[in-house]
Image (cartoon, rainbow, N blue to C red; front, top):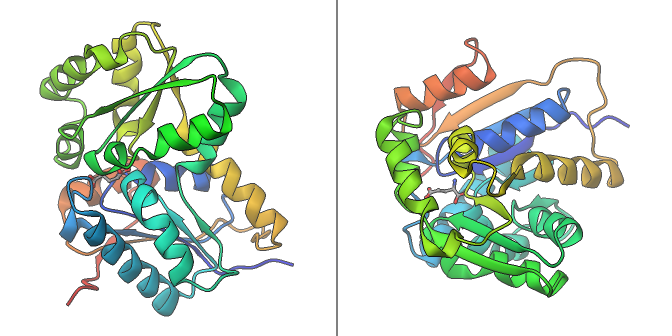
Length: 270
Ligand code: DGL
């Protein structure tokens, strides 16, 4: 049976678009509703309480206004601190996905006896989520984490390709925490926007994990198991909303999804 209701996807800003893109590539017939909470950007520097509050508000909006069939938290910061609160807030049978568990599971399976680096926002790294989840599944893995809070503002400013992004990233990648790593998790959904730069700067020293693809594969598997997929022959409809309109957001979304998409401001916080 085909379920044509949309998958709801949210992040603080353009980061979750990298996950939405992977979902769209893997499941082109699914309808997607994306919400970027640009009014509250960045999430990574907010308190856990604030991130939980925003996440619940967005989940209610997506459920009530758009009748979504599943919710994907396309933000590591919210995945780290708001996934469990959201699971208890939403009906028990409602599918909620985070971006950390699938990546932790994949790493545990494929990288035993290695050193894995994780870069992310303050909220994500302070939560200890990656270390705890990876090491619970595979104790032979050493996890070394680093807070890299300057990257999100650069990406949201549309400066991903700039010299200043290059300098900032080189500074972070030279930190001792990342000295001995075999692979690196971009533990913030904004960072795939600068993945090429990370790979260039790594110079083959470590492998960069493709988190959006891993997450998309997990969502596909679970939707199929729950008989919630939209097996139609039509291209899915893509809708993009933000709590505070910015031209940079619209521009990045159009570069990624095509110039025919439009961005709608929906201030759900009023
Ligand atoms: N893209 C989000 C994450 O994965 C949020 C970044 C931010 O708003 O600080 O953590």
